[in-house]
Length: 68
Image 1 (cartoon, rainbow, N blue to C red):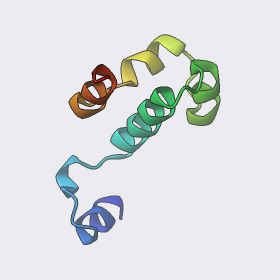
Image 2 (image 1 turned 90 degrees about the horizontal axis):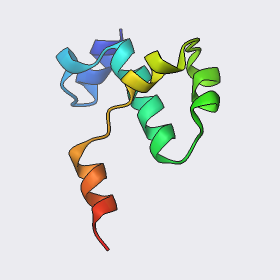
Image 3 (image 1 turned 180 degrees about the vertical axis):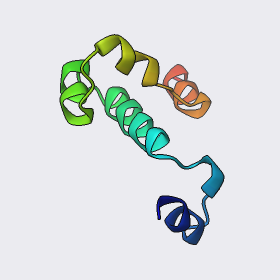
Image 4 (image 1 turned 45 degrees about the vertical axis):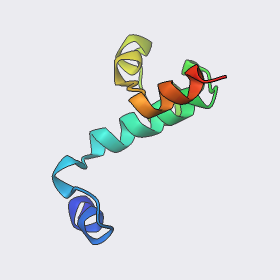
């Protein structure tokens, strides 16, 4: 169902998984300044080191922070 909805929205359905949504949510929250403990409570990560490996900033988001 998830991939069908992604395809309906014009997204690359083969790249959309429950894990990618969870990691995307965690990354977005982290970039917005939410503390890891708060993200872990939302995503139900028990181990913060596992959560830290789920954070994948995009090149675009890091470029935006580098500009004055």
